[in-house]
Image 1 (cartoon, helix red, strand yellow):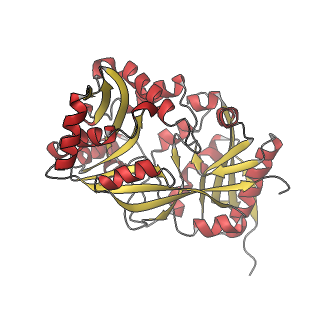
Image 2 (cartoon, rainbow, N blue to C red):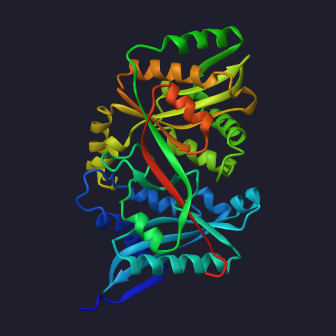
Image 3 (cartoon, rainbow, N blue to C red):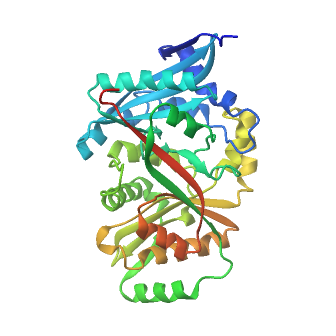
Length: 376
């Protein structure tokens, strides 16, 4: 029996966007580890004019249907900031979700690749949602537990679909689990004492000056990550948007600046694992969903170190240990029992060694794929 006819079309209506956003509920139906995204947030992120990423980017969304029923989706993204920063004609694919349907996946990638090539781009990397400053990668190892806040959960067969579509590995991203220690590491305490005598100190974020504090995060992050694979500087408009989104979620005791003689030179942005509460909302910010979130928020028992940076001049001086020590003390005192550092590039050996020194265990991997668009 022939399968139902396949159709791929660009999303051009509110109805199609609604179906595009709703598809994950079909793909992950019955999966106990998947955390439904907040539909309102995904819609805002994908809407030009509502998110500052689109000030320097453009996108096309494609939806694959069989017999009128959505079976797959993909976004093709041109990020001019990436092209200018890396001097590479490279575009992204993102927001990929698909049933185990290789013809549908191939058709989606043909559509995305055609759109990217039409804009003069010669290479494609992804999934980036919508960039490396967002959620990225397909889960490669660690399918037996839910993702932490702002990390993805995808299905094992996605890697087979990537092979079917001619994509190959670009980079792996790593997540380390670190149980919150009940007792602090004496070695780290000795290092911290030495650093303190040398003029280094750690303080918490000043919530009464939140916007300017986030600008400090931007300056340090853009400096510290400048040479990393896939990095794109965060713009002022993007950090302002991040400030608005994160302010209600920030626990001030979990955000740290490292200072040298009162000059900020490093930071840790640690957030509770809000996925433990978001999964109760089933993607919808209804009054009942918000009540469920607020009730579940009180029971969150883990945190995620989601952004960190140390200026180049102060790296390899033990400053990461000082920041970790303060973070570990606070998370313990606040009653958290588990933490995750994510994500780390597989070739960022300095940060990987630091995570291992802190007692971290590699427990999840994510993969970024790439494909040349020349002659395809």
